[in-house]
Length: 162
Image (cartoon, rainbow, N blue to C red; front, top):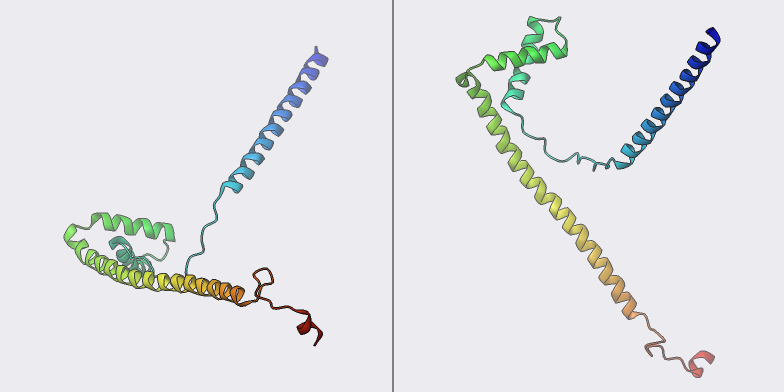
């Protein structure tokens, strides 16, 4: 009986290995497909205005350093969770100054975004107009070049001989 059990376990091991290899192959194929499907993002413009901060982020910005000094052993994750808990405990009245700053930051962003959009649209329009003017110049040059087919070239034997 020992021999039969050994043979069956070998067959089972081979089958299991084959299944594992098939799974790995399928996973590789899936990973390749996912990589191909990923869309490349446009590069972010360095001149674009920074987005506005929320009231909570303004609170965090102001609270982080004092909290670090109070509790220096906290790591970043713990700091953030501590600040989040503090934020939750604040009343609407206590949150109001941060909300005012956030609103001011929103208006700042809106103004900067508007001027940025104007500049970028002017740049794109100037690029388009440059392309158009180059195309028009090329067309004019093509029109100015004498063309034998149109009869623009005045070739006669006398002009060629002299």
